[in-house]
Amino acid sequence: MSPVEISDAFPTDVKLKYIPYSKEHTDISACGNPVIYDLAKELPGKKIIITAAPGAFTPTCTEQHIPGYIKDAEKFKAKGVDKIIVLTTNDPFVNAAWGKALGYTNEENFIIFATDPNGALSTELGDNYLVDLSKVGFGLRTNRYAAIVDNGKVTFLENEDEGGFSDITKADSLLGRL
Amino acid sequence: MSEIIKTGDAWPSGVEFKYIPINPNDPPLACSVPILLKLDDQIAKLPEGGNIAIVSVPGAFTPTCTENHIPPFLHNLAKLRSDKKINLLIVLSANDAFVLNAWGKLLLQGISDYEGVVFASDPNAQFAQAHGLSKDASAVGFGIRTARFALVISKDKVVKYLGIEEQKGVSVSGYDAIYKARL
Image (tube, rainbow over all chains, first blue to last red; front, top):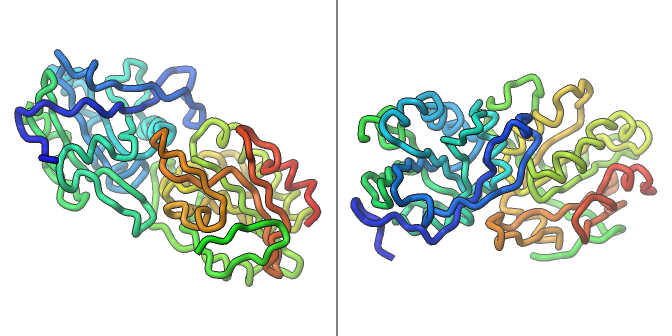
């Protein structure tokens, strides 16, 4: 399978899953039901940021990577972004709990914490977008990567080296690319 | 090597899980490095007549586990210790140790006596798969998970109780079943 490149269409065959935040389920332990986020329906006519992390509640993701996106949500909106998808291979229940723990409790769900089921979407993006961390008991995980998808077309897509954290996936630098 | 475990069997040696010790007063996002939980060592540490209970769930933060299955155990730790001689309670899933630590902190909020509780990861559901205690939830994108079950291991390394849920919900793996079990 050839990797996805700039100006290619972003793959839409894998259906992501997430649990939308709602006020009824404010408590971290309360949870709603997972719903499908269908990229085929959602991408046309929109500007979407996808930022993937190896795991919910892991130190780098929690302390550095994702909080930047939450903090800068309004700045992303001002640049015309319609949705930010925080993606992991954790299940939707874990992702939803993580979103709440990170303090994103906004019913507009501008940021969603979504599951790439079995890493199927990440595999399509190119080599090393999905990494096998079974040796350390983590199973298949997304690498840390970021994408900007404008009206279904990839305008930015880069993968961090071995799950590291740099300007590739930093919220600040992604804002600069918009 | 696959070997189905049943009540009355000898507990296999060499079983290891991973965990991050929990302090419920830490913020939910604080986390440190996972460490090994060696069951052989934990059994050796038990007092005479002591037991270890393992309560396994398919996933942290899922509705049944969070709302029904685990909280009754956590609210009755003193009774489990005094009446059932359960000195160590291991809440187990195939989620990673970071997720389990976050979940454990959440479930232990408001519980002052949480000594002898560990939220542990069965990495890749390795233990569960080897002993007929796993379930394949790949079809819904959840991968291989530990089944919902409860088991009790005695100081002399015998499986004194094993209850595996065959259907949705909590019965043979619940607190009441363990409390009533002859150990």
